[in-house]
Image (cartoon, rainbow over all chains, first blue to last red):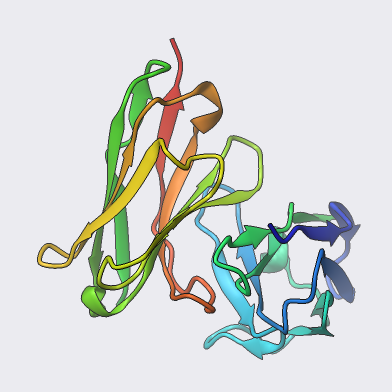
Length: 107
Length: 118
């Protein structure tokens, strides 16, 4: 199985801050990477796919980058509605796997 | 708009069985692959199973292989997960989501809670 390792597991930030979350795959996944946002009690929501493509309707303050095994989600200016848990996911393999999640909390 | 509505969750004893359903609407269900994903209380997301649009291929996580069976009825726009030999560690919210091989999970249902406890 391809293991996905996210860091940090949690972070505290203020509104307006720039936030970066990283995700490392245990082998190359050729940009077959998605990012999801999950708020408490809600289903995950797709934010980005193919490492850097923004899903329709997602604000442009969200961006993604990376290649090979290392990927990054950046929120350029954190908004109150962005406090949530973020998961990366690889879909390169038919044993789909998620990172352990990064909880973004209010400082 | 796309809607995925799970049902069938509940409390079951260890070793018991349960069948989950996911009713789909707002898209051509018979053209899309479908997944089950679960989330144990306070934990992260774990992919469980996938079925191709026509049911021709199925994939399972090692943790459920041989115990869970994914299926679909395209005439009823419904996805199923038959869960047998349930264990305490299967306790989770179970989500259905649509997506293909080599593609992300586009839409998710609201989830249904399965609790395995004596």
